[in-house]
Amino acid sequence: MNNLYFEKARKLLQLAEKNIKDDINSMSLDEMITPVLFFALGMESLFKGIIYKVNVLFTYKNTDFKSIAPIVYKQQYQHPYKEPKRDENDSSKDKIRGENSMATDVLTFGESLLRAKCFSTVSYKNKATLFRLKNIRDDIAHKTLDLLEEQKLKDILGQFRYLIFKYEEELAEKFISAIPRPTELSERDLELETHISDLVALHKNKWKEQKQWEEQKQEESLKKAREETFNRLQDYDINGADGAYTIRCPACSNEAVIWFQVGGWVEEFNGFGYETVPATTSLVLLNCCFCGFRIDKTEELDWFDKYRSSR
Ligand SMILES: [Zn+2]
Image (tube, rainbow, N blue to C red; front, side):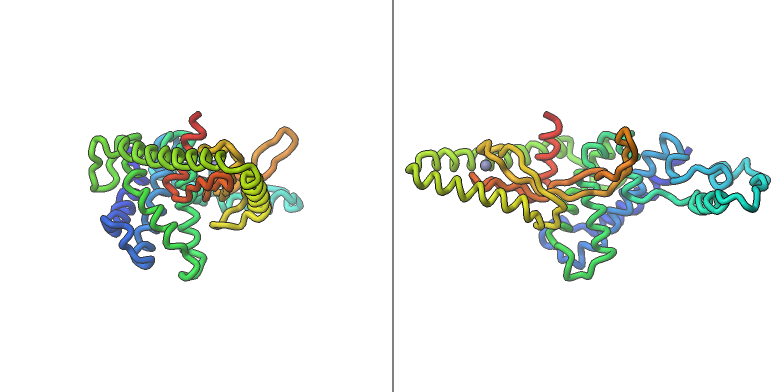
């Protein structure tokens, strides 16, 4: 069976590809809007293609027979399905009609991603980046131009080739015209790893130097760092973050602050009832007030996140 979603993804992703310059840093905000939108639309189709490969019904929100059968089994479906008559006084009737009306609603970006990541390791591993792409697309749809953050668009476009290559590898499909060099994927991981280890080493040394300071100066500096850490946790409104928590600083082992954004919400059963919990979170900034270690670039944070969860 032809995967129509992959075909659509291919069209949309190639439109994105055509509009991305070799030097992303030289692109203006106006120039970035088109490729970001096609990137997001293409990814949504790609997720649906992944789900579709497993079971076509999974691409629909509601798999009510009456609505789904004529769409999915068009060839065989010949006579309309009639619902059994219901009691006029039955109050559940309205509810059922309401449910039917949304039976053929297709999945949103977030819902498609949540389902796709059950079947695709690339989606699972890169969910933070992918939810970030969704948030940026939403920003373009809902915010005025002056509120769009140029750097965020640049960062996400910088992930384009890498992500698509990963999917091409996983799905044995070709989506864009660019061809990865055999080492391109591992080289990128290695470059990031080296860059972050260099940063860690630099701040480890800075921290060691502070240990040589005279006692009073050390005390003052520690006190200031503790206060700053506390304040930052209370006032986490930075880079569009939804919250902050502390982790062990990879450089100096003190408490560093991590800011995160929530990427969509899901209902989860907690043993007593359903509660709304974040579907996934993505990091927006990691900063240590003790040694000054700081990473804020999307790809660095994503790398760090993956590294942390794989340990
Ligand atoms: Zn530190």
